[in-house]
Image (cartoon, rainbow, N blue to C red):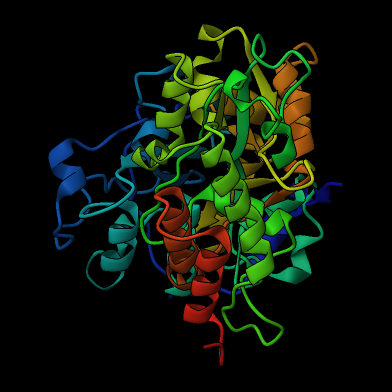
Length: 450
């Protein structure tokens, strides 16, 4: 099922959206010539500069009838990046400039976190140098949450949301929302799944826990997943817990742990460890990039990965089959995260120009081509279809994206998630049985449980 937004009505949406920020100006770059898209990237010194007291050097006066838009993106996603993705986006922006000589776009690349990052500038610029603020910014999920809750970006009102004609995966709609308020236009997605060595699993991929626990476990290859997580629970455990019917809150919305659901996952880890399918060495992995590399090196026959590292090097491992994450019943389920376009410009003319730009970038061919070039999945199924029917990842990703969930927010992960992660480590290190570890986690979190 897809959620339809009317992108042709995005101008009306932007104009109708109630602003969080006071009206501000934007940086005014000097274009090379009318109709061209200057793609300027600040130097590393400029990107890290903490002071915003000096106005932007790009302050040429507006040309009559020309709107200049400033767009901020992460360095890896910049059109100036030395990568296929950079070339693709630069080409799309140049074509946009040819079609809309009255709108000139300057893209600035900034770091994702720390001093001089996108969020840092959004926070510090308004009181001292509002002219350096962007009109449009591309934010990851974590930054989108912070920017929305701090009032640094404009919301998208529910009244105008239904008018946008873009086919979004249901989970993508959630990705662009914070506290049930739409604040971003989902653009690039990343999902979790497994890969398996086809030569080792002749009967097909293991999907349910029972598929990996046969009578002759020594004939099975090792299973690896990023078992370590900082400040929360690892994705493998979270997916298994949710698939087993677990919830992260009780009926009153208070953080809570379902002992039975967590015990189901931990019992699988316990039995897999005892059978030699899984061992405590998985605690050395914290990212799917690491587990994908272990799989590529022949250190595992089944590995939990994510779409980005897999897509970047899938051609190098021709016998890597695709499978959804292991769960108790084998039904497909995944976690999704990614990047969304957010709006800062509150001026009606700039908002209308921003909507025209976003309509172009979200056009299915442009959207799908760019997402493929940077190793992400597009937020629209029609854009993913641009990759072609002969790509097996298209149907696989479509199936998972229709069963995708967002990870818990930082507040829940730092409470419920941390307790669950402790239980995982206790079982993998044989410090407690599955039932003991699950019960201990519930005692720590659940109200009134001792």
